[in-house]
Amino acid sequence: MRWNEAETIDADSMPLLATRLRQVHNDIIHSGADVLYLFYGGPAIAAAMVGAEFSNSCQVMLYHHQQGDYYDWGPMRHQIGSSLK
Image (cartoon, rainbow, N blue to C red; front, side, top):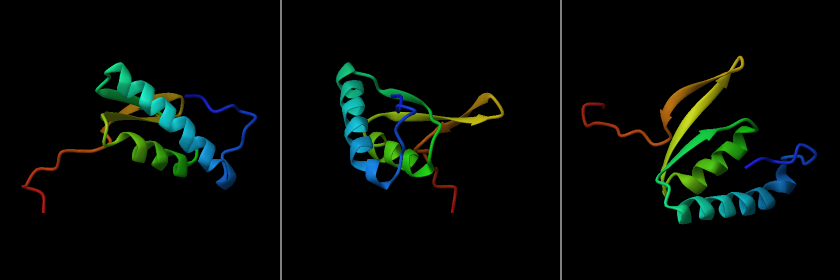
């Protein structure tokens, strides 16, 4: 999903962002996809919304953008073993 560069992501646009994310979410789930590769650039609050919409539906793999390159940071939800306390 691309946000129109002329549109601002701010508190007033959160309902529209949520609506668009849910539409994309539904399209992805109905396609049968079980893994989402997320390349995200934008405000942190919008990233939290992406996580809230997708994390319980499919595996979300995160990619971090740094100095022109993307780096695989693994899944949004890590399986944590019992050896960690």
